[in-house]
Length: 521
Image 1 (spheres, helix red, strand yellow):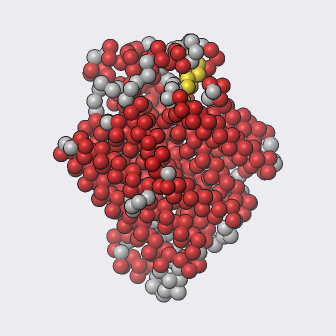
Image 2: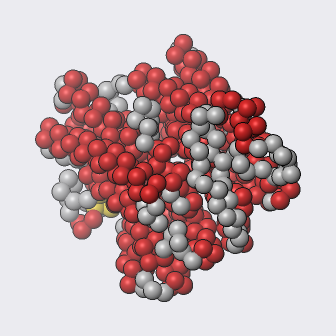
Image 3: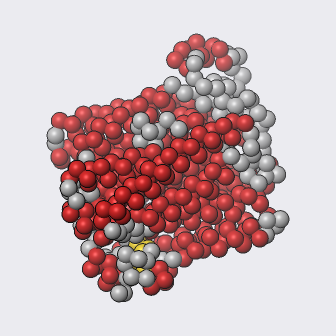
């Protein structure tokens, strides 16, 4: 099985090279991209089955170099699960983009650039999830960030260049902080291998540990869009092409959360900043959902809800019990799938109505009932309506907090419930205006604003565009993702048991002796 691990990264990189070589052949590029991501999904599924059935992680020392000199790729239940989910999302968004490109002549997603860059983005995400040392984690971040710089500015419109510059500057600041923290950790302990750091970190004074801890936490919080470091996200994501926005919303912030989970549970287990995490989680949930409430443009609404729901993940991480970590992993899987699906549904709305402003779009229930269903199901799921996966994940996090039972935990539970209700209200308000409002209703945008006065100063969407044809593959892909969101509920039992086992394992750090045994050295 160990021979399969490097393929998770090398296959997308090789696929990107082949796609670049065949830059003038659309069908070849599409075929290479689909085959590559499908193979990665299958390989990750095999690895997930292997580590779950054996109960042991798979570690590979690249090039046969001994620890800590070589790069270690490490696949446990958490890494394998997230690679599987990521591959599903990446493949679905790819199919959606293929339909969009075929219909629009690749104006928004030029094939020559898009496919190689998209596969490089995938390689960076996969590499980050299976990195066994901090520097390789940094490399994974940089690979996906370089690719994201290109994807977020596709089309070279003024708004995309402007927001792309902000995104690049913020990402560079985060990367500098991360690299500085790695240098400081290596200088203090002589290694960046996560298993070795878990053993050696206690050798440092608590004050030194805290400084290193906060440096990493700050870098990862920027990447994860944790308040108050989330200011960049609502302006950056909505301007990108629909497929790019969908994959960014589903995956990129979760890579930052994943890095936080690894460092908090393995490297800094004896250096407690959980109270800080809980306070930040509450602020992220409340500020994010209030931001969504004040928006009139669907992509901005979803971008703010993305921020607020990162707060649930930080909440679970701050509780720091096996039960809470298992619930956090389940909710992360749920949020990756549901958030991506919502952005795909909004992409369909934009094509059908020519706009994503809830003040302008109306009458879609009668004009596009299929799109209405494709938006409604993930919307109520994100809002936490039982018995859907959003409710299951939130209830599991709240239950873990109630088990701890401190006053701060109950404050967080109340904040989480309020956030969930406001999320549901915001998404259903959009549903009411965009779908239920009749197309022949003569009330104009001004009249709607008068009824919802707090939207009068909301940032406007792009100018009303032309209604465009929706290829069947775009609708089918979105429907497939909606089916996956439903599957998270239908198969919640087995998935939650897997996540619970991950939560238990995370608080049992891997020793260097175990890592040596797993790498066969």
